[in-house]
Image (tube, rainbow, N blue to C red):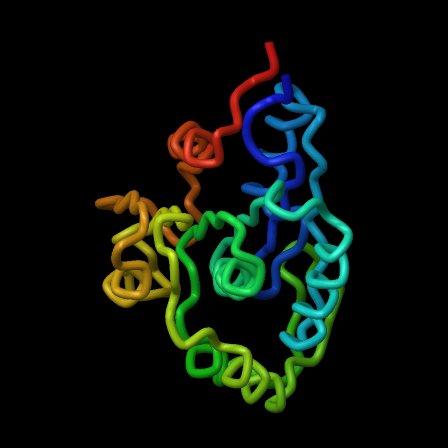
Length: 200
């Protein structure tokens, strides 16, 4: 009898972030300890949304259909919704970006990476058009979505995020913050939604 939950798990980090995101690291540590059978992938996403999604979809094409799930934080949550709409997989959205083409306009130019200030990259105006072109008009089959949204998010509007996922499984936090520094408190609910239980 196979272990419950997905056999493959994809984590998509946020804007200027990396696979060193503490939520990604925390989840990977849990899998290594309790479910080493689950294949884990958290890629470094290129700044171009078109290239980022192409990278992800190319890898997913080799994964078993119906046996994978995606998680994403902030901009990664927006990417996760794109992946879920394209593949039909379950998705966990952590303070997900809703309108990146609008919200990231002030960041056009040369930026530094969050986890390595010495690493610089160019965020081009053309990427805003790519976001607009890739934006799913709405989320469908909302029962396969689980969103964790913090009213204390200092970067994104919790009302806008909540409206975007209306009808999904929702964990609405009275406080917390954009980075979900209390992530460990919500990890059990996320694992429960994904039907990931420790291997006996």
